[in-house]
Image 1 (cartoon, rainbow, N blue to C red):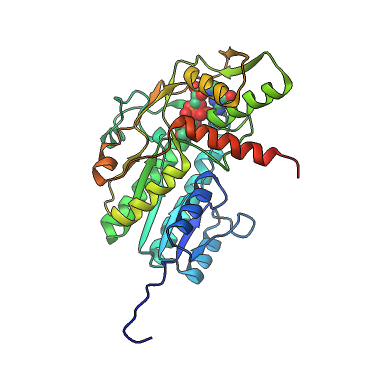
Image 2 (spheres, rainbow, N blue to C red):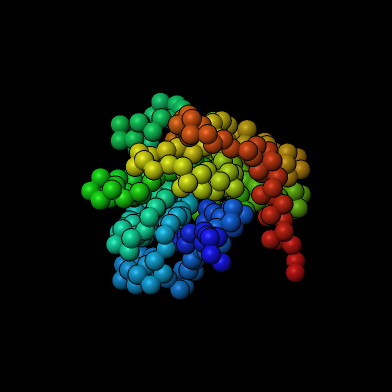
Length: 316
Ligand code: GFB
């Protein structure tokens, strides 16, 4: 119709759309009217393969790339498999970032992690703490890969003026998380342990480490909203933290999870397992100044994740 221009939704490639972050991004993009999404399962496209990624990007030519594909895991998986955490992540991000530049992508969002910051960074951790001290050894491989991804995005921005931005999320949780006890993060692990102990009538659950270390947890739906907000409102190559601004000890987290699940047994501490970083609370003032804030409280978010977990494990 003449005189009536209807903007087509931008074509967005969500890399890693089946994971915790990618699935939340797809949901949020659909909700906000971005219906032109490109996605590929790992069986269809191995992002570690440069030639396949090049061919895919040349054919699809997305305008926006949200890079949520990564090899991820909790403290034990990170500690046990440094080769995969370093190599897979370097390959995935190198391929996707380079192919995005070469295929003319307008905007790319790279997702890092709060573990890029030094083990003993000042708290809350400002973006300026990057590369000011030694990393936490249990996740050094993953952190080095993520730091390299940030630097590659910044290099494309400096050399070619690319709008490749990098967000640093704090510890995330929510639907589609990994609940495997050997490789998961603490929150899904404790949710599962408390649920199984409640069902079996066990008198205690095992919690790793001392319980004294502190972590900040952000529901993945809040992260997804922040990511979209950044894609629409942030162009700087400087990294930006995404968190909720509050942290909690692992003991308090375990107690909260047991309360939400309705498990009334004891907590037993396994001191043979590592504590990791003593504290990891992000300074989110930069994001707040941009006008974004999280909406989901930790208790609400755990309850929502538990509902999802129960629905997955329900027969039929
Ligand atoms: O979530 P998590 O595995 O990773 O562990 P990080 C956080 C804390 O919870 C550690 C304790 O002190 C764990 O010892 N914890 C207690 C448990 N019980 C459990 C349990 O049953 N399972 C697990 N997994 N932990 C990760 C990094 O560090 O954070 C990644 O390894 C990434 O690279 C991610 O950056 C955000 O918070 O210590």
